[in-house]
Image (cartoon, rainbow, N blue to C red; front, side, top):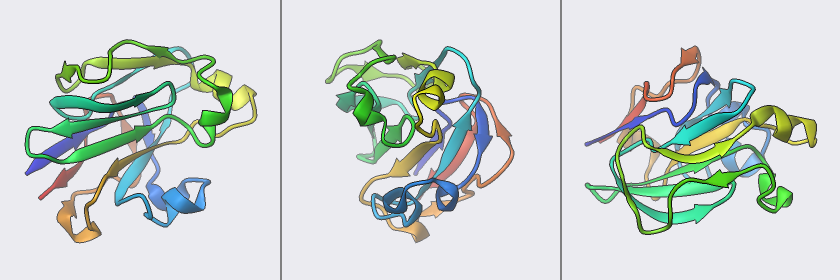
Length: 149
């Protein structure tokens, strides 16, 4: 069992409300999404584990239980070519839940014409493996988003 916590402060909005059909249709995997507060913030690790994929706009942490959790900062933000994102760790690093991974400003992303809504996805999972999925309400970084059973 892996408890996945919010990498960002903001509001849980659920995957169905992500303005991208791939995430909204849970094609990448089940989970939820966070509409982050605006201003310079740090995206933190949602689980204890190892950074197995790291891009300016997204990262995957593999938990101790072998569960890969994707945090994708905004939608189509790959088109920003890393501008406005500061990596605070390296691929391969071991991280603790709540440890800062990427510093960014959702308001800048929004100003560039992209949605700052950030999916948090359980990779290679089925929806019935998740419980307690946060679909609405305010969340703080580190607040529980869902449990991966």
